[in-house]
Image (cartoon, rainbow, N blue to C red):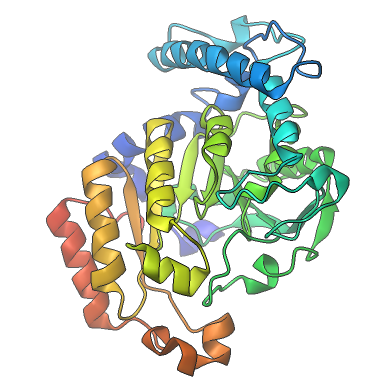
Length: 368
């Protein structure tokens, strides 16, 4: 039934640039290739992750990452069949799980690096301890055409405090939804896969703070389906390292073209350096569809700098230039405090953004 409303979910694949930009994702989605996390589960580690300290774990991670890159290249070429590889007792994925758990003791999943011991119940900026919560999950037919239907899992809380958040009930209330263990999450992913989801979409709120639960859940399932990271991309370098060999397609937000707007509207520091660094890392390790929400009065300071940076640094990425901004959350309550964004973007502003993207050679029409 959803195809009647979104026929472009099929026709989008007739666009050569979409197929080129999302080649790996398409091969996993069509079951031609295995999900990356399944390959990580086939790479043996020579150390016991439960006995090693964090320094030794990172050293092993670096060695296994190099092995992964070589094996992944062979899988792409078709010279390596995953089914011919036995699954070892301890794997690259186990190293990642152990590292995430160790990081949780002085939490630095996101760039805020609160260094609280979430395993002992302490809470940082996200106000979460070590227990994950899922607000809801379902087949989402409102995502970008190549992604639908998307097996979307909405985690609670966030690392930002966006004044205009449309999901503020989830992002500002970490106790929204239900407690979710890694076993629960594995069952959720398998149920979405059985409903013919094209991907497993980790979103929120923000998924970054739930990294430990997400990684552990991958050990408990063997479904071959693209893993999608839908994030504000304010995660730490360590988090990006743990995700790089597991995520098949990235769906990052690139909100602001400067730190000043990010600080005022999302209460976040050093935004552009962190977001650009993580977008580069994503582009090096998978297919990417970038989302940019056009804010009223922010085309010159945010939209154009973001589009220009993407064209120069992530030329293969597809970009969804979104015009669905509306007054929500704090902007709706206190419009006088946010006068610059207290309206919808105008037709002229959207046209300006689209024309600028065309001039830069960005592929946006297939996903916007």
